[in-house]
Image 1 (tube, rainbow, N blue to C red):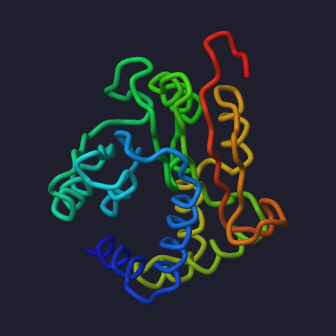
Image 2 (tube, rainbow, N blue to C red; image 1 turned 180 degrees about the horizontal axis):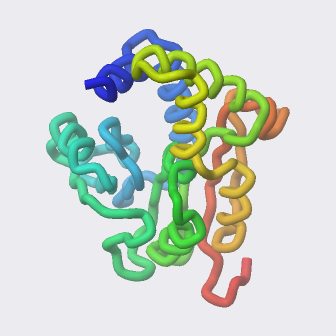
Length: 219
């Protein structure tokens, strides 16, 4: 019940959190270079980007939470949804041409394995679109302190307890994620949001448009 209240507060129309999340999604979508292909979104949750490729019938959402997938399916009945973990994706090698991960990689406990698994599934010349909050940056840490106070009020916990819980949930910094991606991908575009300058410390999100390295590691 408390988690449902927390979810409602985060996604409440008109809330700052809802506006920020919507703005980041639109910023990631603005980087699209290939539409019309089957789109696979990793960690789609209950609010998938099912219109990325034009129509939900060309969309596959992957998440480990069956409850969130049921919510997503109710909103997009024409889309396909699969329950799976990022470190063990249910796709054969080099079969996907467009993969999205929006605000997902910061949560993954097995980061290196998950990034390697994503690269395995992408065909030659495919595109991986990733957005992560700038965990470990100054502005993101400030924002996290604000949301921790809000979450503490809703959950009936101390602010310190919420800070520790969020640190566990958001276990990967933007710097660690960038280093993991670099081992398996070449970057076509790198962007920050909301400002084009300032890097990770003065922005709330970082985005990559990436292609998998060749099997021999060539860029």
